Image 1 (tube, one colour):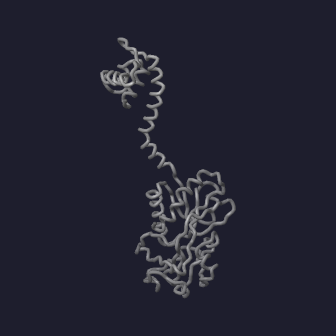
Image 2 (cartoon, rainbow, N blue to C red):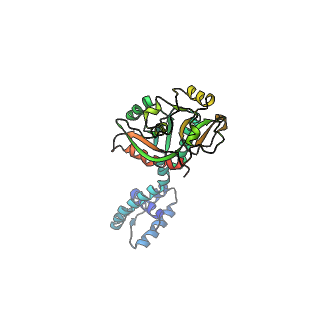
Image 3 (cartoon, rainbow, N blue to C red):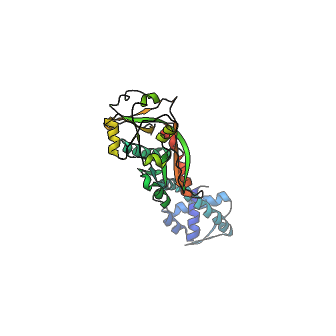
Length: 300
């Protein structure tokens, strides 16, 4: 017994004709007749009564049709399975914003995260940079599906879950006195000013906040624009904190990401912030995909 026999049988039953079944299946009448004859021999009972121009199902044929119809429907669903997988893979489309100041190389990181999510996690994610003044409202309103924060976030109406941790480092200019080192110590950083943002370093527990609260740094310089940040990096040998992620450095940017010595460095939690609703299926799906992100960012 094969699927063509089932297909031809169902068609002949519904058309009450071998010739109409043949036309519907784009085969010859002889092919339909032979397939059904073979099928009847296999099941050991006549399924049709033949007339000159039509056929009618026997009682056994009626019973066989009930099962054959179900089997044929299941087979059609199996045939459509590859397309359904493609459709399902294309369905999840999430807007995720990284809540961080604009920085040298942020476009590279956004592209890296987008490509990573699409190729390694299997979901279409649109990453962007979010301003802290509007980020919470964008999540609550549904404009954003989630925030990706480097450090814990504690805001009313927003649920924040830690999905992993990354080591920390500092970004310096390529001409910085420390730029040729493979890693830096806390003592190495002491002579140089660390950039602190009045917006982002108060939005969540940022990397700078972690080091300041641990009393590991005290030389801070407030910056509230990309121009201030660039000036601090390029003209004052300052630095800003960053998570360490395996994005290939672009020499044209003129900056370097230096890990902090692992014996002294703090690890930062990577958090996914969504609307505070445990029954939100969108949030659960986002978590399912993005819990894989920290391991991928760390190169695992």
